[in-house]
Length: 326
Ligand code: PBG
Image 1: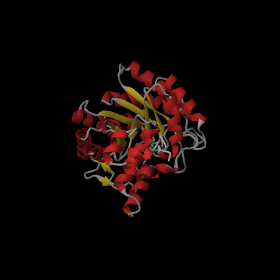
Image 2 (image 1 turned 120 degrees about the vertical axis):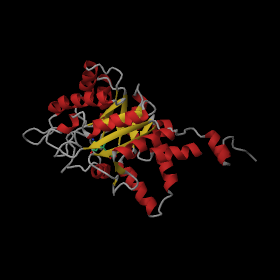
Image 3 (image 1 turned 180 degrees about the horizontal axis):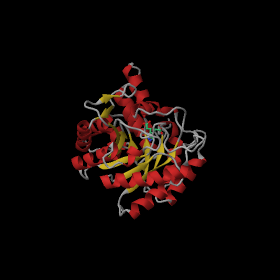
Image 4 (image 1 turned 60 degrees about the vertical axis):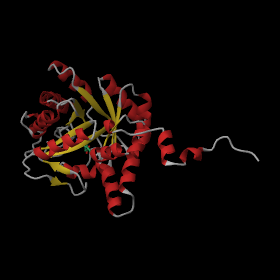
């Protein structure tokens, strides 16, 4: 009788054995909680397509940030929803505007115990919902938008953000933001580049979350789902412009891209498990079709295993609690 030398099942026999021999683990510290704050709310406002996620008031946002700290979550990514919108997204530059104020409030609440990140993008602030300003043909004007991003970035750094997250996919955005930060003396404010961000159908629930005014799509500035090589080019451009970290977004339908970027990037790589990915798992779990906790844990582990050093996920705080228990 011959015995095969390799019997992988030996390492699967008990939970303790599986735990010991696990090749990858996720830790609370690598999770980033995306959070929404809406101007003028007196109570948190549930987002129907993202059960369990709300548009926060100042008070509930501060509480969410403190809870994240208690659970050991690594960071928070803030998105603001203003009361008044216009074609240029002017409210984004107001130091008392919803997002800048939220950054200041969260920083006052948690200090440096949580990495505070903020969205540098105009889509929440424009009355047409695009990530930039429009030219006379309704085309998103790349360079006119860059001027605004530079000012937005400085306003957010002034407010106390540790890391800025330009998510608008304008060419050259990392370079102008880096330059503006340097000129304003914010030499230690980092930038996470949404380097490979695809035009995805899975952003649907986010558009509800930020009450987006967008009609149409973002295909003239976000990447085409068909393209893999192009992601490397986008990352290389952002690195050359000074990105401190790079991101791939969405995560689950783009794990090959994430792997490619993880292999070539000299800086930390983030992946964003987006609203539609959240909604799918929540919906299936609500129907009893999948085990919620197991599915959430597996989905984030898969993103991490594919090469993400950091994962943005709406389950960050809840998942961190489970990881601490385990
Ligand atoms: C744009 C932005 C979007 C998301 C994050 N930043 C929406 C978009 O590009 O349409 C989506 C995040 C998610 O779906 O969870 N500021």
